[in-house]
Image 1 (tube, rainbow, N blue to C red):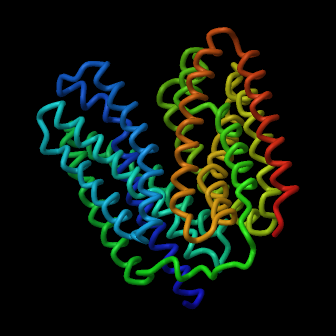
Image 2 (image 1 turned 30 degrees about the horizontal axis):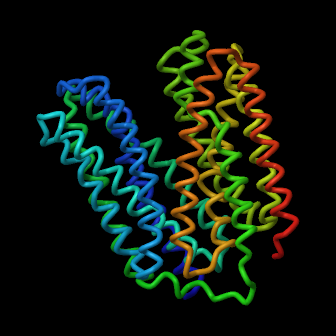
Length: 381
């Protein structure tokens, strides 16, 4: 397949991700108030959010394994994205228990599609540079996360109705499925795009990469934690905090394209920026200075660009074609566990003071750097 068609396919999959994130991010922030309006308790809202994230990550390993075994990458991708129809269907719901079911179906859909979709993109981008391929995909993804909340807020602001906001999301869902069908027609058998390599894959290198990823992620503070600090210390008001998240996503979009190119040129050496910047993030984010908090927001977007683009692209350079979906599933599972444990540790240590978060970040990033050094030493391009 000529390069022009490969780029066309990558861009179409980018639009799939754009419209998907428009749906997901456009309604995620309003899910809690919507369930409250239907009579759900705080426990139900919290339990739904936790269960949804668990299902979204745990299912990636299972779907990745079966997509490899039966070469059904597109089937899992179509089913996963198809379940996003549950979001506009929320417009028809008047009971909180049914709304919870639809919210969980969307999370289940993400778990079903993610590993297979990552494998497809890794196959397609093997000839143009996986860093670039995943970077383009992440840039479209973040554009959707910026547009989605704005669309929902505009429709909600005009009508004052949750149902109208959910119903409007039918438009990006239709566009998503249309782009997905067009992408499938271009590349119905994605694994043939990647030529089998003579190099033997070293499982020890893969384990080192997984350990590097886990320790890099575990002290990365999530935005709700950062925003909690900003609000509690009256550094910024609520509107500014929401705006800062949008700014972080803009930087994520820009950096995704840049670091993707850097990865294609320097491979794993560029990943040394991850533990360094992750250690610096809490130094900036948990201060009482608006200037330092602003730098922290930029750094947050920079790190997210690595998490969602080159750290995923690197998996393809460490695994054979036959195991690609399975390893992406394992990688996503480690990401989920790292995020969960990190949130628990940072939330607990925050009560004792900023210094303890710094020590936690330092120790985890030293371990991350250690495994990355060993990985670069063993990896042969």
